[in-house]
Every structure is written in structure tokens, then in C-alpha cells.
Image (cartoon, rainbow, N blue to C red; front, side, top):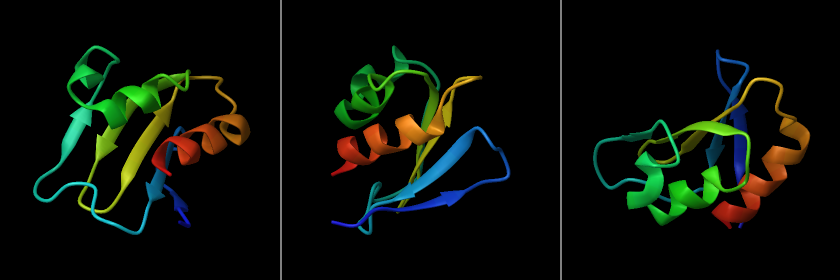
Length: 83
């Protein structure tokens, strides 16, 4: 599976598009690892480290990195979780 990424107006946030539905309806925002405990996918993304927010849209996952996080390393870890 090929996962596309897209920048957002917030340089700390990257949008991951797995090419399949993420949410069947609505959206979901996870602002902490504790909030993500209800979603194995969101929890796994937080477990990659240095993530401060995960947002699910209909066909994408937006991930916000902590200040000073290295996107070059984090991006590959998030893609691995989404595969």
C-alpha cells in the first residue's frame, strides 16, 4: 500500500492519506495519549513518540509533532503504523 503525505498550514502537522477510508462518518480528534486509549490506531501513532495530536478525517490521518520533533524520522514511523 502506498501512503501519500501532504503538508498543512501548520508546519508541525502532516496529513497521511492511506488511500482507504479512515472514518465512515464524522471526524475524531485525540489530543493526548490518554484520549487515544479508545483507538488502537491513534494509540499506536502516539506510541511512535513526540506526537501531541492525532486527528482522523474521512480519508486521512493528521499527525501533529511535538515542538522540536524530527519529522524525517517520525514520518517513517507513522507510515509503518498505517501500513
